[in-house]
Length: 80
Image (cartoon, rainbow, N blue to C red):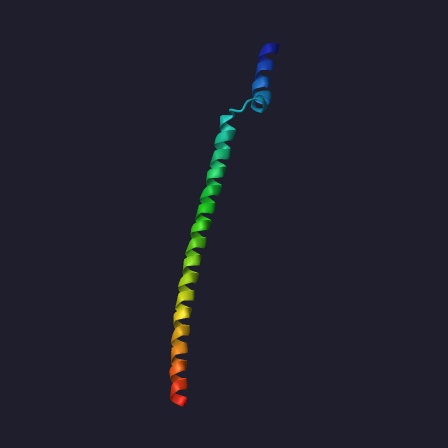
């Protein structure tokens, strides 16, 4: 009986600290890392989308600024 208790104590309390192959812990850590990676991927996609939208807004503003500059040039020619 004493030997059986030692085996149980060893397996339940000691073995997980002495072995590198604690599959349940590895699987749990793996799932956690996968969830973090998915979250980061989603964050990157959102950032890329936001950057693209900002570039499009900048291009639109540049085009409008060019139109205003051209209109101002025409107006100054007429006023001279």
